[in-house]
Amino acid sequence: MDKKVAFYTLGCKLNFSETSTIARGFKDEGFRRVDFSEYADMYVINTCSVTENADKRFKTIVKKAQKANPDAFVAAVGCYAQLKPEELAAVEGVDLVLGATEKFKITDYIHDILNRPSSESKMAEIHSCEIEDANFYVGSYAIGDRTRAFLKVQDGCDYKCTYCTIPLARGISRSDTLQNVLDNAAEISAEGIKEIVLTGVNIGDYGKGEFGNKKHEHTFLDLVRALDEVEGIHRLRISSIEPNLLKNETIDFVAESTSFVPHFHIPLQSGSDELLKRMRRRYMSGLYTDRVEQIRETMPHACIGVDVIVGFPGETDELFLETYHFLNELDISYLHVFTYSERDNTPAATMDGAVPMAVRKKRSKMLRGLSAKKRRAFYESQLGTLRQVLFEGENKAGYIHGFTENYVKVKAPWNPALVNTLHQVALTEIADDGLVRFEFVAREAAPVMPSEQELIR
Image (cartoon, rainbow, N blue to C red; front, side, top):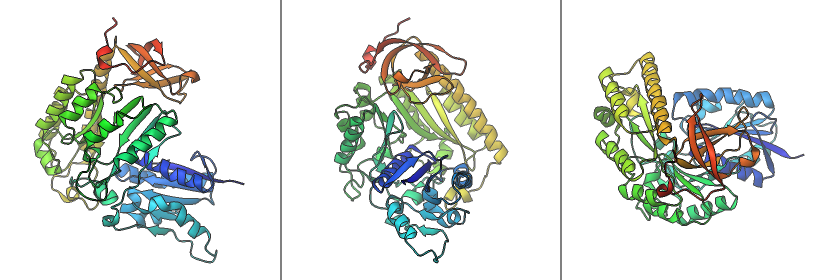
């Protein structure tokens, strides 16, 4: 009888890519992967500690595993496991906790534990390194359960933002070698995956630590140029990138690329320079405006997403409104809104000017409303244009969904023949649920270049 393993991933695209790499290790050991809701011999939870909510969800997920199999082996890995291993180990049902470097050797630890005499202690085991020792790189990518793949190119961060635990959870900035990134991209392409999303903690810092040293062997622009030459990749998408590391040269290259799509996600965190300084961000609002304007100048049709934090210590009503008005006037497409939560061992947690939680939630609601307005306006600006859609693989209430190259989400009646295919379409109207309807123009179309995107009204 084969052994079964199930995975649950909290947090970012980087976590998803690493879960897939860990899962391939289990496959090599003879495990068969099943859904987390099914019976399995082992459940692996890849944790996140960016927000308080991710921490709280952990116990619920463990209970879900125990409900599926009360006798299962449960392991916790990832960022929360690195930051608070004892806290996770104390959760009833958890057998193993692995930190930043140990998670990639999980099958070794499992064999050791399962081969011990039954008389030995059943207490949860913890293996968590000092974060200074997390200085080597493990490449990974997510594939097999999506029409796109998340390709990890970088890990760790040398920035010291006052609210963030990621440097404590993942260590220093370090990069995959350029050749290994290209090899992984070629492997993904060979599997028939149409889109690759580049991911990491601070991908604009790519090149640092590439061969185990601090200096840059290659830059992010070098990476982008090299990936653009890989055969068989239909789409390349840049995930979150810091505004100070998104250079004009990169924007200009994406504008002319046949593979990189016109979609940028750029963290802002606050539109107030006073708060940006308290956060120890490495730019002011003026630079952020310059980035948006440069993108709009070269790619008027581009989608621009923004991360923003509300309720940071010292955020008065006036400073919040400064952020609100800044975003309202900025030509962006949507927001990801995060309600600030205090994280242990961060400077922000001890700052004066704590914002009441009720106020944080009110401000978050205001910005989410602004995001809906921005997204609607962006979608309306795209009606009447030709776009290329990559269709997803899930049947959602009788509909299939997909995304254009510039991240407009579309819908059509479910048709399994469309899964993981590219089609040129004309965007026609916005449905009641906010998604966009379309008409087919050509099937399995070649990529539509910006110069070819003509109005068809």
